[in-house]
View 1 (spheres, rainbow, N blue to C red):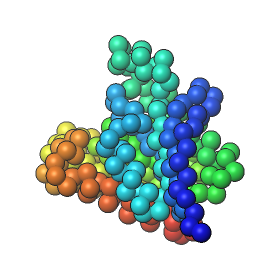
View 2 (view 1 turned 45 degrees about the vertical axis):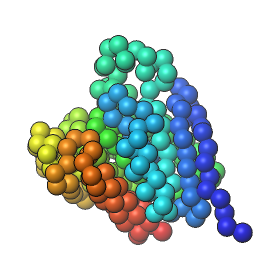
View 3 (view 1 turned 135 degrees about the horizontal axis):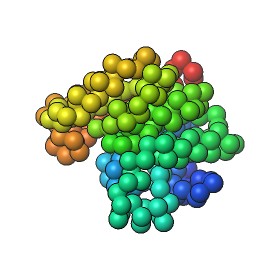
View 4 (view 1 turned 90 degrees about the horizontal axis):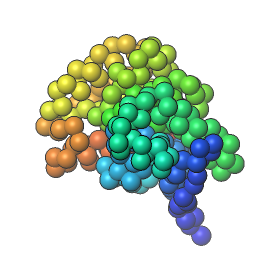
Length: 220
């Protein structure tokens, strides 16, 4: 009998972050999603990428990096979405939850970050170098990782839209500071949110290839 896909709403300690876990049968790895400025685990763009990863045999964990109370504060102040140390801490808590869960701990893990979540994912990857084996950033701000860029060990793919000129330059500068396996992929004619026809599909394909390459082999 074919196994069913595991779909579960979970709460990640210690602050009670809400998250959606999807793990297809015989998953070869799992990707934790870090959403961008003012977004949440319900981001339609991240959910689209997550579905492509699931179809490629990878589990996904989409979580809210802020609690409901913090989100209400951030709607007024707009400062928590740029608090990279806080967001990175929440991502390390998600990685720790995966390592502690009997069903999930055997799956190699990676981070997928968007916008400010890209910087937070890189900082969190430095904090958990043994747990996080790959990072992908979509329209991200890796420059916000600061001094942590020198310490990233996880193979990292930075994806930027070809029309997102300022973010391209920020990504190029960040890439030059990184010492790990790294790559910058520019999606032609795409803007910051990859809303153009085929742009998000290109992002999902690049991310799927990167994660499958670095999570499945050579560790499989």
